[in-house]
Image (cartoon, rainbow, N blue to C red; front, top):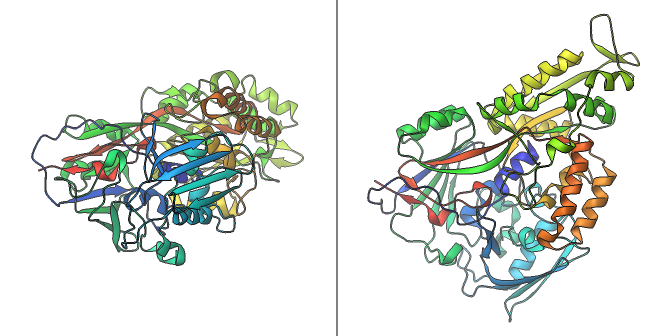
Length: 517
């Protein structure tokens, strides 16, 4: 889904060791092939899908490690409060076209990303949900961010956005099929449907931890090929058809014992939203609560992970800031059938629930592109609800069709997806509140005033000190049955004759990739 797609492709970071298993000598100036789940119709780093490959060609001001530590990127140092952030830039950084990056260039890039007229879905998944301004001092090499109202995590949001270089800002349309950033690679070849070819830059020396290009074993080319089926990606890993792929489902079992590098990434499997759009049945909170209360969360978790699962504890993954065990205590429980009766739903002659002459119908959508077990999760939900008397249309979509249903025609009632989720609780704000598409990202049309009030309070509190308030806000989302996380699980990034490090969200750090013989 667009939220899940955006979240899963946007959250980038830096170091966090993968488990190397390849011991053979490295390949000099080789080619590493990476399996991409979906096509990339637009490589603009702030677009919905282009952001997924942004780490190859663009750098942020700071990186967030897989352990949650904020470390230098384009900025060597920073100071921040809940209203401000001041970054000091690294000297000598150049864009892929040779232009020396200035502080004013960074300020223009951040301002461009935040412009509400641009409607950048990818950027909005990272940036604060409150307006801000950016100024720069080229002589001092500083970039200053000023928030219009408090925001708990200024550095971890604004600071992690990819920075576009001046030529790209002058001609934004050129970024759909090309790149213009300070990153270690440059997009050299684009074909509709893939493959997408990135070529290594010379002279790059400002990556995470001082990483540079030209190190022995670092690939000269990175080729992204679209492999939408996990079973196919697993086969290609075993035969060497791809060097790096990320899997979430049961195909991972057959990859064990084959000498592959593997890095597990915490994820929320089956993250589910309910469409509260006017005229849809789930706009009634009583119906949402009844349907959630009816579900066997343990059974759903088992299906979601393809084995023995653990019901999800939170809307975010286990490594997220402010993550807590909240779902079990706050999700609706009790007699679902009675709740529906009390809300005015009665069974007709054929056993279907009816109110005011209208049957209770739900359109439940999922996409195997976001996880091979998700259609089965949807099937189990549907079977449970049909037992109550609900008519369910179960649809398994391509990722593009699912995104269209959520953000364009709104033709869904329940959507089931998988995501590492945002690294910050504030990353959920535009999906759980605010305007709907096309003005915003609130595709489920959620209106929860208690959540909004607690969010406003949490944003005034600095960094992790805000966590108790964020937890109260999430508890209100659960009580209202606005969203349902199914299982705490992992996805796994595999490497065939390839070693690497991963960052927050599981993205592979490009400068860490080494190809072995």
